[in-house]
Image (cartoon, rainbow, N blue to C red; front, side):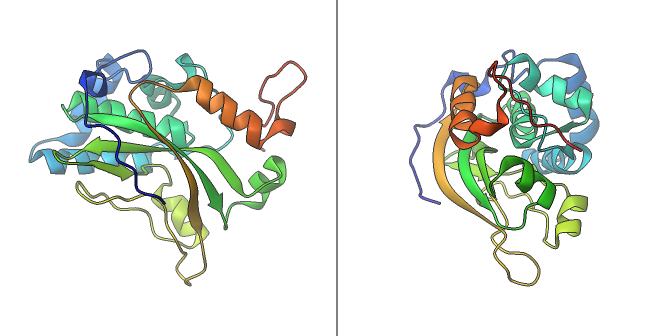
Length: 220
């Protein structure tokens, strides 16, 4: 994945808004329950593992509205796709005082489920959501999306937490076969880029929208 140099954090990267609603009571209670005591790195790691493993990955729950993508809504649903889970992780980081942004990218899913590929008509996932936090000197990218149970089923290892090194996608499965790869990075975003998400979905999957322009892909 090409390296870019986004600007250092601003006050927006700590802000609790309608999507990254870090001050939501439900989110605050869950964060307090998860992170416990210890260093900031320990707390971030516990929150990462909660979002990764306790929130079920659901690739069909696509929506580009702010309300549907709020961190608290994902916590209530206990499931979400890559953008939902990354937003939830970011909101928790902001509540811990860590500047964080949402990243979007276009990725190739070489070992995706047959059902999802058949419905999308492609092994490309776009836009794929990930998180980025500021470690004091640089933006560090992570993907708290694919839970340990799902990774085991697909024959790969879950992505572990690192405060200072990028943890984006598994490049290969346990047998060494190609698993996923980044094709294009759409950058980091301090506020929710709903219009950009809609634009990328329309460009990649035009057949997944009905005549009224609504997303019509649902799970089995």
